[in-house]
Image (cartoon, rainbow, N blue to C red):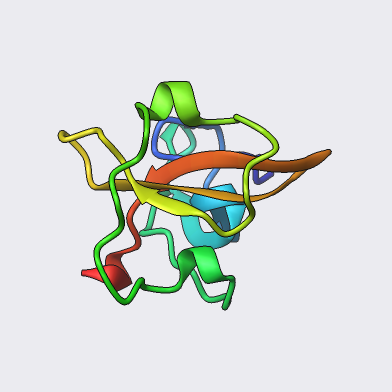
Length: 117
């Protein structure tokens, strides 16, 4: 009863807990989402990165600003795996990274991990 993609705006129709739901940068993180009532939306915890993939490891120094806005950058392919940059979006704390994607590599942008703060 857990949908493949869950976030705080996903509708739910049964009381259920969905541990280990994928989230975050290139879907490398996980979180627990639950539906507290038989109708409403899922309530999801913070996205946590437990892996050692270099793009989710806290950088030693501040990331350089990205070359373009998130909306223009996401899903651009044939990038250098492991490259990261600080999002130009000043209203949210986000970063972008190039990693494995179907057919090669691609950029993705998401919230900066809380462990980096």
